[in-house]
Amino acid sequence: MFRRKKYIFAVKKSHRGRNIILGILAILVVIGVAALVVYPVLRPINYSVTVEAGSDGVDAAAFRKNSQSEEPIQLLWESIGEPDWSVPGDYQVKVLYGGKEYTGTVRVADTVAPAAEAREVTWFVDDEGSPQPMDFVADVKDVTDVTAEYKEEPDMTQLGSQEVTVILIDGGDNRTEIVSKLTITDDQQPPVIYGAADRLTYLGTATPLDDGIAVVDDRDEAPALSVDASAVNFNEKGTYPVIYTAVDRAGNTTKVETTLTVSYFRESAVDADKLNAAVDGLLAQIVDDSMTAEEKCRAVYDWAKANVAWSTSGSDRTAWTKEAYRAIRWKAGDSFTTSALFHGCMIRLGYQDMMVQRSGSLYYWNLVNLGDGWYHVDCGRGSSAVTEPVFLMTDQELAKCSAEAGNGFYDFDSTLYPAASAR
Image 1 (cartoon, rainbow, N blue to C red):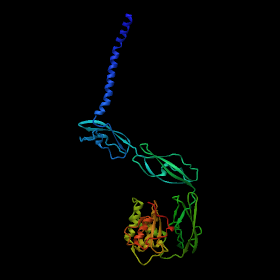
Image 2 (tube, rainbow, N blue to C red):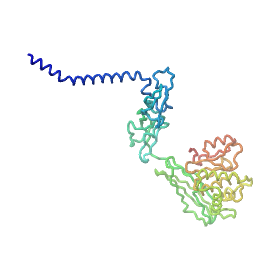
Image 3 (cartoon, rainbow, N blue to C red):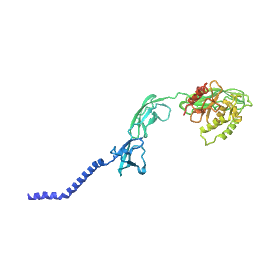
Image 4 (cartoon, one colour):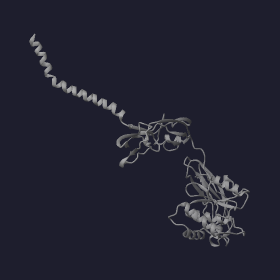
């Protein structure tokens, strides 16, 4: 019995050091836990402040625990500078308060889902690829970058209309569903040929038959144009057929048949070579390769406005080349003269141009395409009632000028010309 008690006492004694260590560790744990609980309570500033992404920044006062305190508080971003407030994330900052420096965190959170307008899409069976999710939305609003994905892939083999749901996802993983419509169809609309009309030339004088011609298609930006003048004999007086053919990429075709009359040469006529030499001489003085297309166009407009005096003697409307040459050589003429001058210069510069005639009148101006759509230009005398220059105007802008001038000054048959609506 005595031995058994001695044995028990011996075991307790052998674990005494370990028990002391465990006790010390337990005390340290208690102190640590107490520090974690008590210190934040006693700490005079908040550990973290949250602001919405896209805000103008963070108010330093938000770090004060005591909102009634007026003691100065300052945020020190040190060398890294303030964060991008549109990018969600946690950003550390030094907080100077009560004479002490603390470490705080500014959390930029994105809690607002993106917004957008639905945009319907028409897709043609011969289009390459397929529409992308972003094609179905417009005017996307969010402070972070937004991506898009289909809720369910559209069926690109189904002709007709179908509903398409696009999911917008912003930088904070907020999501918005936008419901739109996809219409898959065939292209059956042929291109339209503008400017194809009966023409006049003179014996022995070949004339370009594609100047002043425009081809517009609802889908194809550059439909092919061909001119069949194989029946024309420039060395024999007569009237010959000329056929203009336009084909879009879907194979839709438009044909317009016109005539070319070859007449006796008149001494007053000006052939293409003579006109081109005069135009090149003028352009060498007023434009250079450093100019943009619009700047070159403006230079021709300004020169015509400043140098071609208005003449009441009338112009020869059967020969635009003659009137263009007259504007350069004699610096006088009417609206047909200035329109012909502008027409010749634009063609020589490599741009598309058409001379436009006012409805029921002999007033002329131009429609020019510098590569980004058609626009109206009037470098003639114009109307004194119009308060702004008619230079690269859309149809709508020109109609406003026409109303301002009164008497339908710029009224014209819009079916004869390509629409000027691009901006």
